[in-house]
Amino acid sequence: MAEAIPAKAHGGSASGIALRQGAATGFALALAMLVTGSALADDAALFTQTCGACHGKGGVGIPGMAPPLAGADWAKGGKPDSRTYVPTVILNGLSGKLTAAGRTYQSVMPAQKQRKDDEIATLANYVLATLNTAPADFKPLTAADVTALRANKVDHKALLGTRSQLVQ
Image: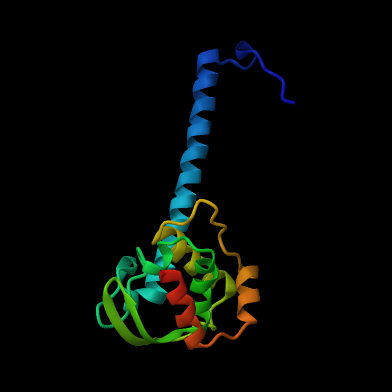
């Protein structure tokens, strides 16, 4: 345990020490916020780079091309399967007819298996918890979770079936 050093022992006043300690605490808090903000910016940049061309800036979707991911119909129910649905779609891609936000889409999303597991986890967490409201008990995906999902080949018909269940 640290010993208290009298203010006069090192030439400072008690209020000066408190001010420096407060500044240090404030700096640590600001740094933590900056790092967190920076991580969110990095997540958004990865999303924009990987998904934005089709799903639009901020995941709002592009009518006739790709459905919105922000405020997604499948996420509104907060069902547990939504946590694995997103990374499974990222890994395997998705094609076929689906309806989102009252619009029908018939397009192909390519599989992103070439991406690292931590990138897929980051993308999935961004879609699940930033572009949508995550359930209170949401547990962010890890690279290990994605590794386990990667081992399971899922066809597009099964993914569309999962999506239908999530929307109900």
